[in-house]
Amino acid sequence: MPLVRVREPLKRLTGGQSEHAIDGSSVGELLRELERAHPAAKGWILDERGELRRHLHVFVNGAPCGQDAHLEADDRIDVVPAISGG
Amino acid sequence: MTELLVGTRKGLFVLNGEPGSPFAVKARAFAGDPVEYAVRDPRSGRVLASVTSPFYGPKIWYAEDPAGEWEQAEGIALPEGGDVVLERIWVLASGEADDTLYAGGDPGVLFESRDGGATFEVNQALLEHPTRPKWQPGAGGLCLHSIVPWPGEPGRLAVAISAAGVWLTDDGGATWRQGNEGLVARYVPEDVPADEIALCVHRVHRAATRPERMFLQFHGGVYRSDDAGETWADIGAGLPSDFGFALALDPADPDSAYVIPLTADIDRVTPDGRVRVYETRDAGASWEPRGDGLPHEHAYLTVLREAFDWLGEGDALELYFGATSGTVFGSGDAGASWFDVATYLPPVLSVSAAGGQLDGDRGADTGR
Image 1 (cartoon, rainbow over the protein chains, first blue to last red):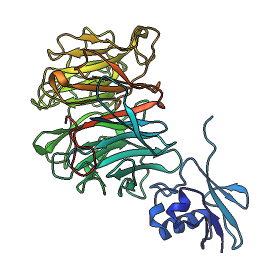
Image 2: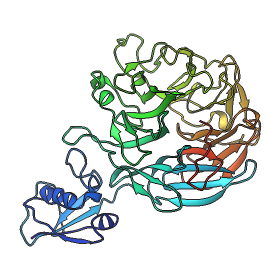
Image 3: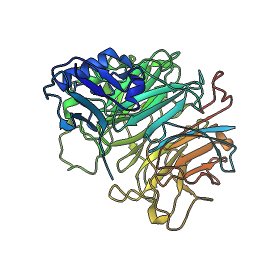
Image 4: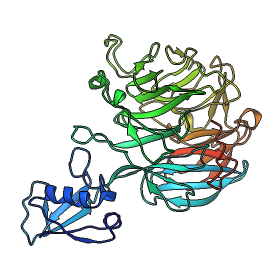
């Protein structure tokens, strides 16, 4: 099962855990399931359109990926704030 | 004791003090995040804050004590599956009905809470207004920044959107109509069709004792309405510039208004390097500068639309405004003299004043 890693404040909003084993065949599916499993995090990662928020980045096994990226069972997904601005 | 809730680009600052001397910083919340606006509901004493994380989106939070724990309000989102996303909550305002609060945001949306700010619902009539495809955003986005209840009549409300103009409802938001007659948008060609909606209203307030009277700071122009926002008359003559954002009133005097002119839309700083508040006591027929105690040399400040507020009334009217330089100024004598409230805050986005009981459980006076 893919493993998604989050940092504060998402860690606090997802039960205080920084790692979550969540089933999903794509990044988008996994993030939707993460928010569904932890209602306090709803809207923090995905916006009303279901899109990844503008200044969040997702990495799969260290490589930047979009929501459509396919996932394998042993993939590691990181959700991190973007390095925006100066 | 006066309390100021100062929203900044780097958090909320709660200041306490008495007019005439610098205020103490009682608390800082949401460190690092932009706090667009915060207000203490005068009925419950609850503090609400709009926080726009650049990473996690806009939220509203509430607390009984701003130095304590905050809870996230529910419902601050647009309907799922649409093609628009909530960008920011610009302002919060108490409604006339018990426990009613409003929140205005980008893209030109109004939220209503009927439980004191714990949960909100978007106003569908405004969200789905048939003219919406014609609405155009201002430089700050399509922001609903002014929410103006009618004293004693919960169903009557005015809101203003940059740059979609003034909107009025008499039925609690079930239907909306425009209230823009007389506003002149000098920044578009004079032959633009009348149904083209590009009216960059910057701020609106209503006179407390004469509710049909309203004042409006426009994107070039200061206006007054004597018919509850149906029509507007330009009252900007006599000001060094009729461009600006900030607007305040004296609740005791329906002929009063205060504005803080900025040079122009292409130079949004105080004119001639002097910071001066301009006051009218004759409904805009004349304006007097009020700058005693304010910087008057090489002072090029920007004061944003939510960064000017008041408390009390009459000769004891307290006025407070903050600049993006991080300074907050105050007056305890209706603008006759000014003092530094705080000097080295982050860029100030909003200022909200409250007084009276501030222990969070017995309400507070806010001058509204």
